[in-house]
Structures are given as C-alpha cells and as structure tokens.
Image (tube, rainbow, N blue to C red; front, side, top):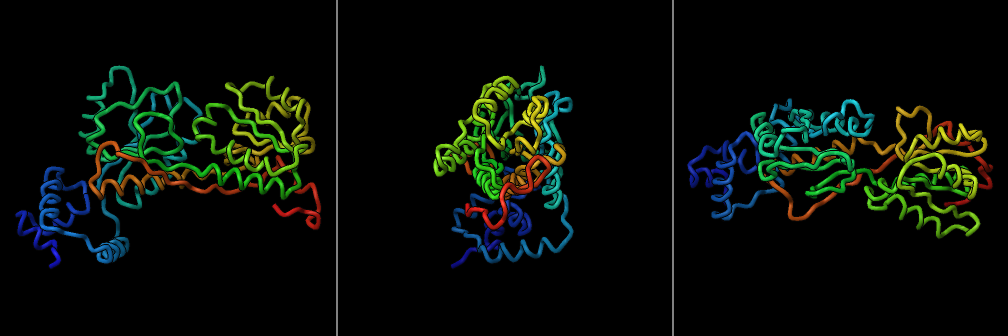
Length: 346
C-alpha cells in the first residue's frame, strides 16, 4: 500500500500543507517540524512519486514565484576596493537565478576583526539566511569559520580551502581544448601557455594538463615549454618570449599583453595573445569567456537543491558542476595565418 501525504498528516498531527512543504525541505517550515515529519514519513515507509513532483514543479513555474527565503553571498573584508571582477560576475549570476526561484540574496562580509564564528552565525540566522554561497578565495583572505550545521552551503569557482563543499566552476579543460582548436584553425603552431602557479593549483592543473596532452600530439619543433611562475612579473615572461618565440601566448594575466606591447612587439602582427578569462572588461581581447554568471546560477541550483532536501552542514562527499566556456574572437589575433583550403583538421 502506498503512503500518501494525507497518511503522514494523520500520523504526525500536522496539516497536509505543512507536511507537503516539509517534505520538500521548504525553509518556511521550522527545522524541528521538518525533522519530525521526515521521521514519521520514514517510519510509515513513504516514498515520493517523482512523476507527481515533476508535474507540481511544472505547475509552480507557471505561477509568479513567491519569496521563499534569504541566501547570503559571503565576501572577504575590503572586497569593494579590490579589482576582483570575477567575484562580482559570479554574484550577478547568483542573484539572477535566486530571484527566478523566489530567493533573495544578501552580501555578507566575513572575517572582519572581532567577528567571531559564533557572532557571524548569529547574524546570519537572525537575518533569516538558510543558504550560503562562498566565492573564490585568495591566500590573503581570512578563513571561513562559522557553525556549518546551521546552513546549506556551496562554493562558486575553483576552491582550495577547508571545509570542502559542493561547487560550481568553469570547465577549464573544455575551455583550453576550445582555445587550442581555435588557435590552430587560425594557423598558429607555436602556442605558449603562461599561468601563475597559484592559478594552476586553484584549477587542479586542468589548464596545464589539457595543454600538455595536446602538446604531445604536436611535432617537437612546435612545442613551447610552459611558463608557470610563482609571481607575475615582466622579466621572466619577456625572457621566455625571447628564448622560445611562441607565435601566440595563452595567458590568464592581462599584464602580459601590456608587456608584449611595451617590449616593442606588435600584437597581433608579431605575436598573438589569448586570455583565458576573456571579458568585456578587457575590451577586444580574444579568449575564453568562462561565463561566470552561468557558474553562479549553477551554484544556486546546487544550493536550493540542498535546501529542498533539508540538507544542512558539511557534505560527506562533494560534487561539482562544470560550465562550458565559449570562444570570444578579438583584435589580439590575426584573422588567419593560412588559407581555408590549407587549414588542417584539428
């Protein structure tokens, strides 16, 4: 015999509407009530019908979305004065997707002097915040510290910090493959990769491993050694350029484009340049648009899924959502070095 919401309501003493909302993990139902209803449902052997849930979800999206709960996007101190373009684009995507689904998003600063984990936890709870989105961090950022058991939480962008969370990020391996395909189709052969070691570590070497795999399929004379410095400074970069003479540079650092021009090289006549995080902020620079807004939206989907399932605290295992990048043509590359008839298959 199948167990219905009516049966759970009768056994638990709660109204059917309350039971239905609790089983969906709706944060408007008190956590204690959700736990009691969930326990009753488990005891009775209740199993949700996925077809009914799909139908109800379809019906709900046809109606105006009502406010459900607050989410917080945590930011480190002084972020307003830092040129961290990616964080704000992630936030744009978080806010847009959360708004579509009936959630409001606040930016909350963590790690300020005197703001203990206990105080930050109280502030978030008092603001009615149930879910957290954590942005990418730098080594100079303060650590995240609060009572994780009170919240559902996800990370956006690449993360190398504790605790580990479910996260959404750009698909760097796909982005690198796409960039190499575009560059070779334009006739570039000696492609050099310039990437700060910290960025290589953040991305779990997905840029470099994909590049090296591609490079092994090329003639030895076309292979340019990687430049993975600890710090981004012009002297090692220009020395690398003089020694290995790549005909196009793949880099995550816009400074490298300025160094090329200041060294007397014409871009793109002498050397092409491709940015691994191409954006309107960089003007007409060619490269991979990692679509941070879509990454932020994907993080919200992960987070709201946790809220609906009433999942709080640190996950026993983590999962990630990877968002494909797209190619942005630009003035830093020649339109073609070879005729279309002679263009090789890549």
